[in-house]
Image (cartoon, rainbow, N blue to C red; front, side, top):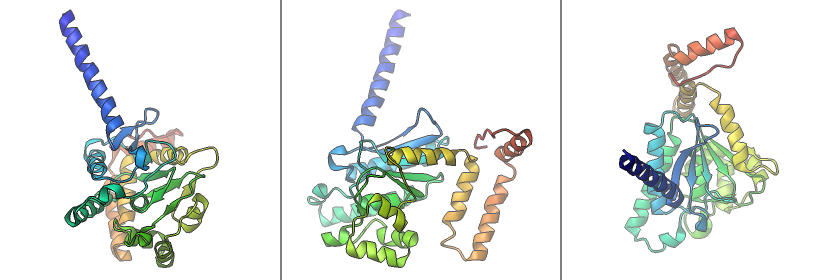
Length: 288
């Protein structure tokens, strides 16, 4: 019995150690918050390059997004953030890019496009917590999130590609227009200007800016907690309906909204909300 217990403890120790190492050596990993298990963070973890996007990071991001979409149904809100302080994502890993063949560059861009599309299509609300430079592909990554929260002291937010002889290649020319309008998107990309946190808020690049001494993640967590109070199925239905708004004529969009509404009428969460209102208490939603 003692030997079995020792073996069991040894195996558990190996599992814990392996998980610890994986989250510390991975360039991207996902983890729920201990204080708020319904909120998960997707960490970018390449501090030596301010989280520049490498081929390895891209592959690990895809694995994280697959997990968030298909394996972990408990996530109500996802925050994309840096694992290290004063960072977000500095764009593509240009040191790695210099050694890529044209075919490898094309594959990287195709994979990056697919990854950001997967991020944008996640069923739960997503928030980019920007606590450092968000440049090029890093800003494009934030555009694929539903909301962007910037730390008050961030000074480098922009799309500098035209100064590098290229253009934004991960959806920046398309998502910037949808987010900012045509004129502002052209200004941002033509000039390759760098925005501070306060300027990003005025331009519409940021939805919120933290107040000192709070970080962008601190403010993003407040926002995530507010969102997570909603019924999970309702949040997902609302996101799905709004995401189709740009693609559909108004009448078709209204039909899609009605269909999304109808699905929620028979859910346990809707019944719970009505009971909670009657009893003058906060509802306890379970995503059912």
